[in-house]
Image (cartoon, rainbow, N blue to C red; front, side, top):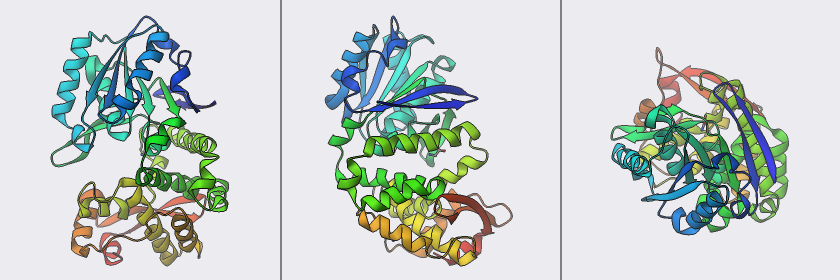
Amino acid sequence: MQTVRVEAQNGSYDILIGRGLLAQAEQALSMCAGRRALVVADTNTAPLYGQAMLRALGLAGARASLYTVPAGEESKSLAQLAALYDAFLDAGLSRRDFVVALGGGVVGDLAGYAAASFLRGVRLIQVPTTLLSQVDSSVGGKTAVNLPRGKNLVGAFYQPERVLIDVDTLDTLDARQVGAGLGEVIKYGCIADEALFARIEQAGGRAALWAHIDGVIARCCALKADYVRRDPLDKGVRAQLNFGHTLGHAVENAAGYGQVLHGEGVCMGMVAAARWGEGWGVTEPGTAARIERVLRAYGLPTQAPNLPREALARAMRLDKKASGGRVQVVVLERIGRAATHEVDQAALEALL
Ligand code: GLY
């Protein structure tokens, strides 16, 4: 088992990473002894891991119960949030008790925000079960639900007390979901760790990388922990985590949610941002081609689907707040080093 420490001014905690952790999580959950714990899972994770989670909490001395939400982005709604508050009331949760988020990004964001806001904050443990949530959304305290007019419009920064990553949970993910997570893994190499990028490059494909996936997840968590330590409230350097998101979000939006997965959009966006950076003279020439080669080797998309340019531009305008007609784009100086670059909104749209 590997441990990565997150030290942030709004909360410090350990991320535990290993295989078979759920089956032996009693010690990792010792803070739950004598407390109530409501496990929030979805219709995918509840049947797979619900009982193991309840058993581990029971062995740790908690009075645990399970609440299941429908799988899918639709559950990040105000209606589902209200239903969750009811479940918290029914379970008799006090501020000393725990919410345990067992699932991917949707469950983590929803249960996390419910925990942040119920009674002005009950204790939270994240148990992410997708690669994307293990390397990104479960770490760093971002929680949110969607409004009908946009994603993540209501939320809070609320750090968990513990993150428990059982790498075995990835065995039940389909190849497309794994790929979406790998897109984020490659992103960490691009923005902050040339050695990680080279390791992924040298592995040459999913099967070889999988033999070392625990270490890769731990490295990504450590990189994320460093961004969170430096910028817990996302007011500065943490924006670098959005490398590839300018085009990525626009494609996700314009294609219609669910058509292009977030991690897939990020893959397309990374190649585009590297090309733009090369064109602006800030990115080392050859960087875009290098990223493209790695994405191809991992069976990941490198190009946006054919969407009307106006739809992409509109989606980008909604997502990227321009100030005086200028927008900030995360670019690379080279692999392993990110920066931000300010450009004209109109000039950026012309590149689509
Ligand atoms: N997902 C990016 C962040 O946590 O800042």
